[in-house]
Amino acid sequence: MKRILRVILAVLVALLLLCTVAAFAIDVSPLGASRPARSLYAGPYVQVGATLVAYRRWGTRGTPVVLLGGAAEPTWVWHAVGPRLAAAKHRVFAIDLPPFGYTQRNVQPTLRGWLPLLHGFERRLGINRPLLVGHSLGAGVAAAEALERPRDVGGIVLLDGDALPFGGGHSWLTHVLVYPWFNAAFRLVTSSDWLVGRVVRNAWGPNAPKFPHATLAEFEQPFRVTGTSTELRALVSHGLPGVSLNGLKKITVRRAVVWGADDSVDSVASGRASAAALGVPLELIPDAGHLSMLAQPARVAERILRAARS
Image (cartoon, rainbow, N blue to C red; front, side):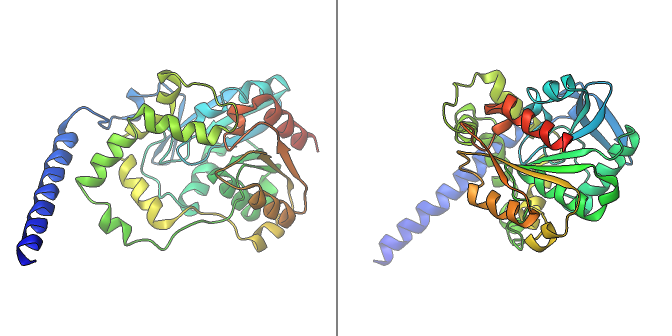
């Protein structure tokens, strides 16, 4: 028995050494290597304090709409919704909240970091009392902004996001997700069309198309921005920020909750609970999953416009 245990231990040690060597090899390879945001995305950008903020915009006149994406979502996800809102006479802005998209990675991934960034972004671009549309993680940011600064918010739409906090209290993970293993795994996973494709298909909902590399690269490329892995570790430690159900009940601005009817990432039941707390009906988008703005952009845009007119 002792001999067997010694053999097992030797095998485990050998595997650990082999994995460590492989991790170091990946770290010095070009696979998934980090780069400055400007080399990956041409812009536009705006300087907000010490942070270079990446965004997109559509339309030149009308009341403003600000689109806030969720986890691992660059502003590209709004490419089919933004122009529709602009065609209906709105100035539309989509902002990258770090550590996602192409905004510089020097902001704490919490409400304490994101809300001042959003305030500064609005000031720099002359955005007054916008309708905030928050998807998934972005729903929590929209709700927190409406709760904190109701006079400066024209209304909110929670899209496939219940705005509630999730996770947190896992600071011990920062001691587990260490170099070089975490970096190697991060670069491998976020560079794999097969893995990223499976995630996107699951989030898309029914009738997901076959995604070409160019589409998957829209999700993969932002992970290459310098500093992303470090801030992701911090986000895992803090958890996804949001507002409590009691906090949602205190929101007084115009509000709507819109949900993909086939969302398997955030359940429809979660949307129903948040809608009830906000005192509004839950609006379902048929034939759409979590990425409803991609699966059904026309229907999502119509629901946003309805909220803007209410």
